[in-house]
Amino acid sequence: MKDTRLLWKLYPSYLIIVALSVFLSGMLVAGTFKEFHRSEVYNDLKAKASMIGLAVVGQNLLGSGRGRLNSYCTKVGDLIATRITLILPDGQVLCDSKKNPKLMDNHRDRPEVKAALSGHMGRSVRFSHTLQKDMMYVAVPLVVDGAIKGVVRVAMGLGAVDGALAEVRKNIFIGSLVVAILAGILCFVIIRRISRPLENLTDEVEMLRAGKRRQRLYLAENTPREFVVLANAINEMAAEIRDRIKTVEAAKGDLEAILSSMSEGVVAIDSQGSVVMLNDASKRLLDIRLQKAEGRSLEEVIAHPQVCGIVRRTLQRGESVEDEVARANGSSKILQISAVPIQNLKGGKASGALLVINDITKIRQAEQIRRDFVANVSHELRTPITAIKGFAETLADGALNDKKNASKFLSIISDHADRMERIIQDLLILSSLEYGSGSFEDFSRINAKQLVEESVKAYEPIARERGVCIAHDLPHDLNLAGDKRLLLLALGNIVENAIKYSGKGGHVAISACRKDGNVVISVRDNGCGIPKEDLGRIFERFYRVDKARSRQEGGTGLGLAIVKHIASIHGGRVEVESSLNEGSTFSLFIPTEPSPYGS
Ligand SMILES: Nc1ncnc2c1ncn2[C@@H]1O[C@H](COP(=O)(O)OP(=O)(O)OP(=O)(O)O)[C@@H](O)[C@H]1O
Ligand SMILES: [Mg+2]
Image (cartoon, rainbow, N blue to C red; front, top):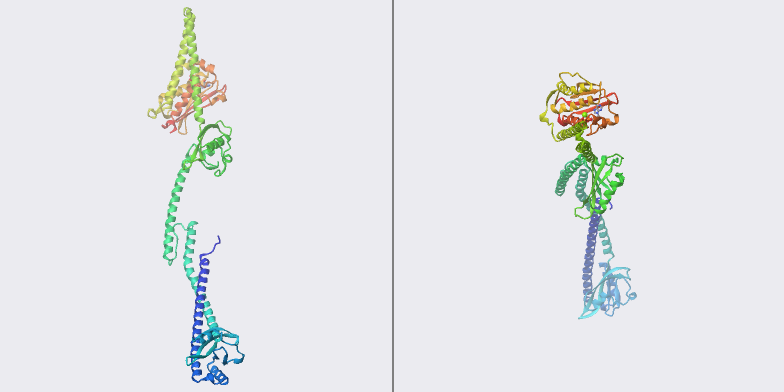
């Protein structure tokens, strides 16, 4: 659309209206003036004709001969500046003040003469070929004794009138032009006065839109009331829009905060398969590196064909699809993908899909650990049960009578029963640790030196038996917070391992120090050590480096799992350093201040 200012839209039409009205009224005045002049001439001619008629009849000039008549006509005609013609009833011109009557046509058919001959006053305006100009003719009958004896016709040229009329028209035109110019200027000023506040208002609204006016429109003092009302309405509307935008932005901010704090990945896709929105977790889980993913197609953003396939299926069929996929970057992580159709408000075809991504690696790992654990427990229990069952059957089959073997078999049965008992005991400890034992309320202040001494005392007989020497040198002032029964259990396990895996002539050294808010109790031995590849797994349940040796030692493989649990209950941890054939050092970190589960 052509951009024209209001002023230039209104002004030309106003100008045309003014010019036209001035011109028309001028024309009207000129017309009226012309008519007025004609009627004046007519009245004048009428009077003159009547008077001449009276004079001609009165002085009986009709019968006085052409010569006298002609001189009368010419004299009077010159005197009153009017052409006078006398016409006989048959139309023959008797005399004329301007022309030789012999040269003139028969005038019977002239309209004014016709009217006069029928007894009325005749009038006609036409171009005179005789005088070569517009003339007004007025004719009256010459009545003598009731009979029409002839016609007096007077005529006057209208040229003078038309000249005066032209002058009047010229003046009217000049006057109209002046009036039109003045009216045009006035129109311009008036329209300007209307359009100026409107333009100001438009500028103000534009500034408000561009954010240069923060709150309200500014209007000049003398702005018309209508515009002030309009500006106030716009101000109110702007305030309302501001409020609404604030509400929408707050809601959007809340939504973004919620989405970005979610650990689940969320991606919204429209019906065309373009990404509408996605949160940080989805970028992390789906390895999306694009800075601006919104608006791009699904396949461009998510480099995981399986995930894209799930979303496409949901978009096509309008139904939820759920599946598990491996993470695209070759890691062992497992993602649970669920795509749900987003119905439009009218409940019609799917207008998009919402993709929710969950990292279920830990859940699957936990399930695997549980499965392994059950398998391990079954396996660990089956071995002693099989042995007990086998030897019991052997005894029942007659070995009871063989005294020497019978007591040997019974001692084997007893050993396996002990082993089963130990396994069950350790499992019970583990499950009680998992299900809430070692609560914060049971914590007390414990002196580390006393704790170590008490533990060593319990294991000294076994150490002596195995030819292992235990040395411990701890400062007196090391105190920690914890459950003494559990800490003794943990430390005992570490000390027992050190003795077990050192062998004859082994040496176990226990020391302690304070480090980063923890008391660190270290148990070092010079035993067989642990291969590097096993170091990460020795804290798993039932994991043993050398199964045969451990079993021979009566170990269940649950000891270090229990230690790890106890350390974490106290908000601490257990660490190991080891070199094969050189020895190992196990360090138990327990906070000096109560801090169960690191809280
Ligand atoms: N000080 C150590 N030196 C060498 N190997 C060790 C030491 N402590 C633990 N290990 C290895 O770690 C494994 C796991 O130890 P853990 O205490 O859990 O089980 P265990 O001692 O075999 O049985 P349990 O302690 O239940 O009687 C052991 O089987 C052993 O192979
Ligand atoms: Mg052990």
